Length: 612
Ligand code: G6P
Image (tube, rainbow, N blue to C red; front, top):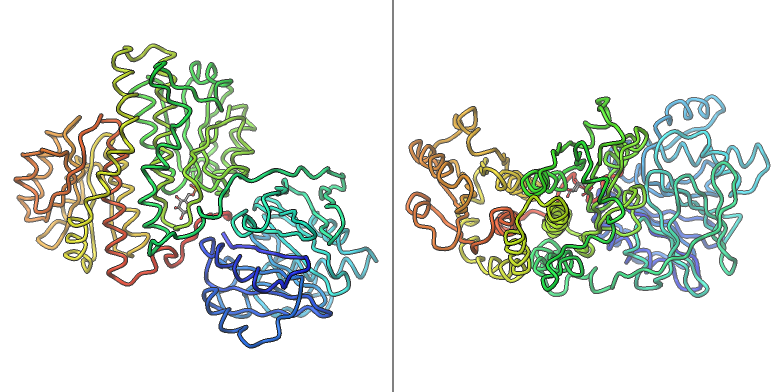
């Protein structure tokens, strides 16, 4: 949520900053700005996308080798030119960019107003930079110290970077609850909210820890201390990410590229973990906690958004295969409802970004009650990955499209492996059954490949229904979370209202909506409750609803009833979500494109929600 990119070195800063902002635009895109330091601090900002900022700065003198840049997802104050970052201090000698929320900004602002300060914007960020300048002047301290002192007065979350006219070639960065990574190059430094804008210049990075402040000075070693004034030794890590993973590689949108990456991302998520020859599943990252899982009173899965849907599939998997009771919770509810937790509970936190504020807070709560926390994250080095006791990465590669696609199938793959590893240890599956499932997982990437070839049917359906106002998605068992995920994808990127429901619940409400204009997507694959779902389809047809069905290849019964059919390959019941989700992702993608929506950056959404 909000993107930060910063440079100090010998190159021109503005091209690096603008390119970095474009890479980060998926984090927030309602306004953007840069501040360049060359004798004076000059701020340029603009409402709208990075492209609008680009137009705004065209033709200006942008000469500077130091600069900070920001792309915003508004929290305090509407998205306009004034509220966009960077913000000047009162004297205009300092400039700041900030991700997060300063919760006590109002009381801090009142104190500053009483002391005669006049604010230009409605933002909490401007309050912080005024406070820092006030401390610097009144306490006669340097910028590093002023920032440290100020942050002790702040309640809330922040990733900030500050530049000062009086200390050229110096950047001060700090984090709490919102990530910040420092790239260490040859005679240059970068700072960003994630590694994506840095990767093409250096692979050596330092992730700031909670409540740390960094002093970054050109041609000097990096200095880090905590806001409580404790010196820290910077730990430089090497990034594994490739630049090509951040490019569209010929696809029209990141979302489409990511949909098509799924055969690879699913394979990467089980590679090295699933061993067919030896007939084992080895989850290296959580081996140490396997006993804890086996003895767990229950597993609690916490997540948000699409990751929560993956968690629901996880519930079915753990209960079905390993016979361990599971509860799936929205992190945002869990953290505020005084949950009952003991040392015998294992919490699995699922997050693509590893930065979702509610999930992180829920982890901290569970940890404080003694529960064991396992993370299922996609971003290595992310806050959730580091807050967990152990975990398993999803290896989906960077996901840039705001609507999550390949991260979901990678999460489901990892959860399947975890459930299987536990089932094997517990002996809840016969070895024949265990091997059958293992063998089938191994063939899933090929089947996803095949499923991706259903474009023609999907495009025809999209064309037909792109203008409807409502969609209903129905499924049962393992296909219920698939229905939820299908509906979420559609509403996220096409702005059509869509609801996911367990198919049998239809008669307790949604059935009232059904008429001859209402498309209903059934995930009606041939296992589990197939026969029951057929009855639900009949109920819809009796009310003249339009049925779009995802069925197993060779299906006869549903094909006769449905108006439109998309076939997916035959697979094990618990693996169907990995295939059935694919045409639903594509359906929402094509509908959104046909409606002229911005697929990769849907309105009001952000990729990484680092505020609650
Ligand atoms: C945002 C994103 C969703 C994502 C959710 C949870 O809403 O737009 O795509 O599913 O956050 O994010 P996480 O990174 O924790 O999986």
